[in-house]
View 1: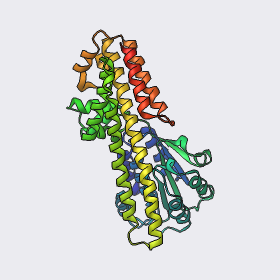
View 2: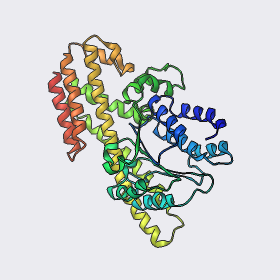
View 3: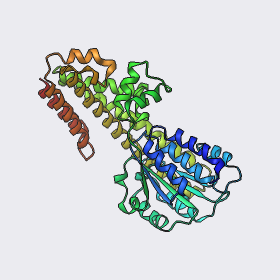
View 4: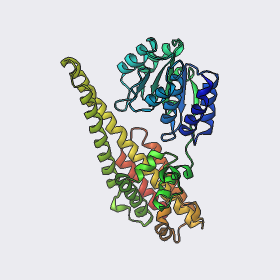
Length: 380
């Protein structure tokens, strides 16, 4: 790459990976020495993998381009109009095998339309079925010299070893609470206690923090707290977890409807037989998306319950500076009066244990009922 592009390249990488120094160093080095054919950007959600992939892809596409600045501008758009940037996002909870075959595997065989390189980004690569991943192996093994693949994954363990072993991994770490706080506050220290709490409850995921600050997120947080507080007060018989299940159901239904509607809209104008096939796929994808979102919301709710119990332990031990629910300190102090810190920590462990149990086929209502009655017994 030419000398004139270096300052702009450094600025783009710095902006995209400002809070990921390890990833920034790896990507800067890759562009300086020449990128390899396949990368795996691995790390939790909300850590900047997507933005980094766009910036990295843009720089690869400038090779041989007549107007590098215009390439960067078009690559930064979402969706991008650049013909040599292919960005694959799963329509629901899983990538369609035919999309992977047509847009990536077959697409990689075509020479660049403009410069000297083509880039294929597979978002949520762990959402590829084994069939898709196996189909991709030949492209990973014998890619054309002009093709570069970037796989993004929040759960790299869900990818086949044969896929990950053919990619150079770039790690993205969870963001520190202070970094999340600054992003939520536009670069300034958070003035709102609620923002400070969301930054500490999100597990380093900016998107999750933003959700907690939305009306549905606030409702979920309030209902999770009600579950934890009722267990602490010995009032589990009120069955507050039923409201959590209702919240998760509503979130799943909304996501499923959005996914189905989007896929049906994409099928408009197709030949009748193909359109019917796409509509059937949309129905299946909508159901999978609804289930996945429901599970995700329940998982977050249990994380919030565990966080509340941990905060109770911190307050009971006289360490309020360790509290994550900073905007609920007075409630925590009231609930922690006379409470044994070890009991609160045990309740947090029970909530985390239930999170793990919900990853397998168990009755969610029964799991939540068991959790909060056990937590009540421990706390009392």
